[in-house]
Length: 89
Image (cartoon, rainbow, N blue to C red; front, side):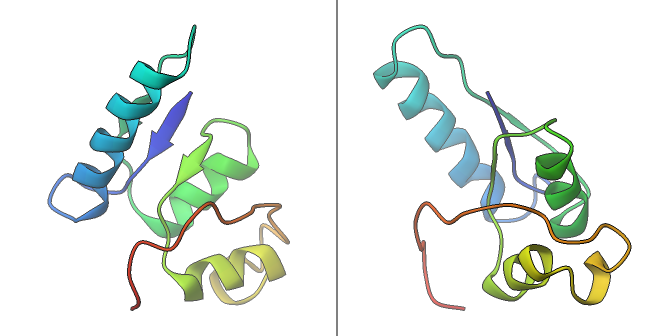
């Protein structure tokens, strides 16, 4: 399974690496990896296309993606769900 986490200089990449290690260790027959991407819109498109499984995202970007608003107008609604809140932003 693939976690997409933006660039290596942003906070989501270390979170993604940690989550990948924990899930790989705790889920039998599962290997999680974290991949560098161009960020929010790119990541949501990877989720939508089935090329990624988990994405760290800010609330406003998630809202736009699931509603097909703003930068996601061309893509349309992207089916996604929340797993957890890391921190308020």
